Image (cartoon, rainbow, N blue to C red; front, side, top):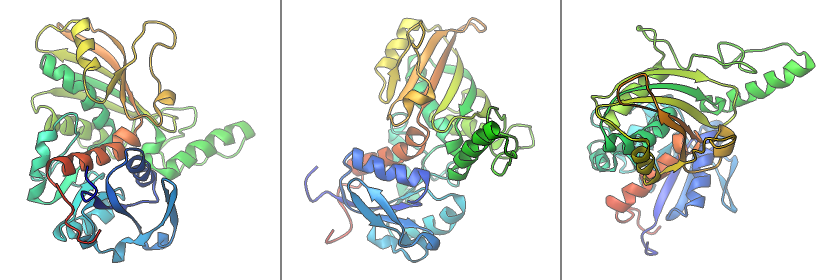
Length: 348
């Protein structure tokens, strides 16, 4: 990357979990940024956040001029995104949105760079690119090489999702409830429908008419949009008392026979995947080990004899990284590699 090919990046929602992680990843991956603007709500104006060895001061979203940025990474929820993402896009800034707002819009590409990089070309339709749901992102990274090996007919997925996917307040609630159990404090519930400490909750997002939750619906329709609309899926999404890291038990039925050796080789050679699968104690990855890592980890690879051509696997990833911030930064990297060959901001 030559010196002149540097870009002005805005992080919208820079004070939240995902926004801060975006800043960490931009620094770690040495993204060619001429300048990084950190943007948040008016109440956070002037608040300081870290970017590598620098400290940046937040600007108010209400007054930020998106015409002075090449790319805006939105990590602020659907409400502010609905108001400000179109304004940013109209100003010529490419929006990469982490909310669910645009994912299923036909004229907005939904991208995981290891899975469907070719679809990013459609960003010009609205100047907006959608980042998938956290649980979907890691799933499709693992499914893609297997689908290329032998078409996937059906997938059954059970998730074990950490509380960080629900934000800072949810993490605080897990900590407070856990401590409270040991000191006999009153158990307070504010962010979850049931006690989360020492418990699991089979309920993420709102219920839909068919009995599925919206989180479960998202996994199905997003996987079909990015990978293959003909894949049949059944999902159960569960919140577990883990701070960071989503896990998934995945059962796949293929259209034709797939050997374990071929499946392992396909996963071993796939971008973004790390296979850790030894049939012994500690020969697999748990959320504790995936925190801070870029990869999606695959373990417990085995034959599923309940169907004719079946495999089962265990998929783990840092949901704040591949499930959100890392994928958004990777989209930005793909964008400047293939489309934004130089900054449109003069003098930066």
